[in-house]
Image (cartoon, rainbow, N blue to C red):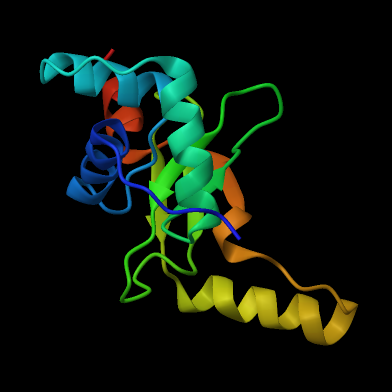
Length: 139
């Protein structure tokens, strides 16, 4: 059993993640955002606290692509972020949360016809977002 203790740095990290529920942050983004607020936290400290928050069930670690850094996301107590799919724009890199009954039906089909359970929170579909398509059409 993990001994629970609160530190200023841990509280800063958790507060940042809570402030934007549903947003995925890399450790580097957390460091930069805190530094922009005048709070200096080292990279090892950020990773240590993120690991602790994951073990406590407050944060989900998410790896979108092989070879890319992990993202971290606050999981609210209401479960609003417990199960959804992701769309990732190949142009700008933004990650979108999608709750879609059609994708749920696809997941059900895959289970019933192929005996395979899809993890929605780990599923990523790649493409181009509206904004990037608009920017491309304007050029």
